[in-house]
Length: 209
Image (cartoon, rainbow, N blue to C red; front, side):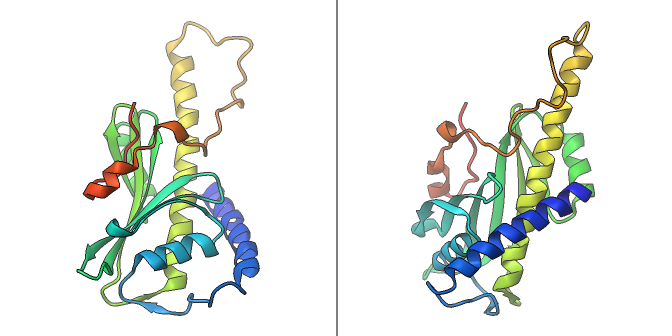
């Protein structure tokens, strides 16, 4: 919990600094009451929080972006009408690494704000779903994104540490030249294996092996 709050504070600080720089470029919508969301709204969220927009898919009201903390994430509108304004919003991140169903349930219990989904033997997803039917502010949607990114980063780091521990536990002895603190970059996703075509069919994006 402490790490999550620290990460969230860092994310908020980085996003706040960028929002000040961007203030002159477009009007501030943070106080708007949102009963639906559009592709323009998703682009606004990404840009005003300082994330790097990587792909914009208007037909499916979806974006892929690299978060200010180095975690790639996806947002997609759901329950959309013919004008492509949507009453739901799905935010998710897909990570490499094995996760058991028991561990996924533990994460859901620990972080009620998100769901943890086991995708296959070498991948899992951290996601958040928002329902906008009765309205919420744009600022609250942006806060939900920051919370989800911070939790996703914390889970990924924890799972990387668990993988190292499992490796050492299954070995006869620990290699002398291995540093337990020398973990892989826990916020980096594999750029070369992102398959964005899945978003065209409305399916969650998963990386190909």
